[in-house]
Length: 338
Image (cartoon, one colour):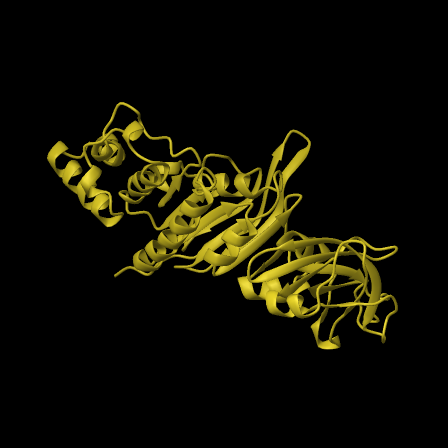
């Protein structure tokens, strides 16, 4: 069995006119991993994916798959397959012929390609719908057909451009579970573009947070959440409060610190009790089921957030407009790098 390849970007840049959409990005994605490119609109994540696929030409730098430089190869010669956000299924072809289409373009015999397509539909639990047209399928079913069509070429890397964004919230969670299970079963690298923090956290072995065409942090989901590299990462990932280091009385070289919202204690009161507490006024209270999210205005700072277990909140509730004290343990203060 051939060794599965790493994907490596070496100082890759993409310019549109004078604008650098992707700026000197270097990244190594280990073979067989699930990588999510995460960031806000316009951060360069989709352009990066399209350069790996060959649908955009890199202005500078190299894209390496295993030992081969694929920077200037056409898409079909790269060993990658792309699943588009819109799924892009042919409306006049049934599921079998949609999945078999790329084999048809390669001149594979009709019976052979349709047999392979049915086998691939079986792999994504869509074999019973083999004769249906795309319009006769639900969004989740269309996604599975698009996945089967991308996988039939036996790619070494599957590229996914916001594949879950068109689905309703319940189906989105179900399909992300299926995507992760499929990636684990196939053992190939998936590179998945998303703007959803929850999606990236749930799926990725490697989370790559991008901002203004650059990588802010590339690490495991757990490390990105617990040790954000910058104030941008802490704010974008969510679940953190970003404070000036001086306000949090933190030691370290960074000007700012991050404190997880679920590590902050909220109590009624109007005066700080020690060096690791701040006084403020409750701005909002949102019941989220097992937790309650409390927003607090502190003079001179952005609104802070505390996520409180339901039972603890019920034992000591607060209401909008009420003075409160926020406190935290020194060990829960993470000094940000920049």
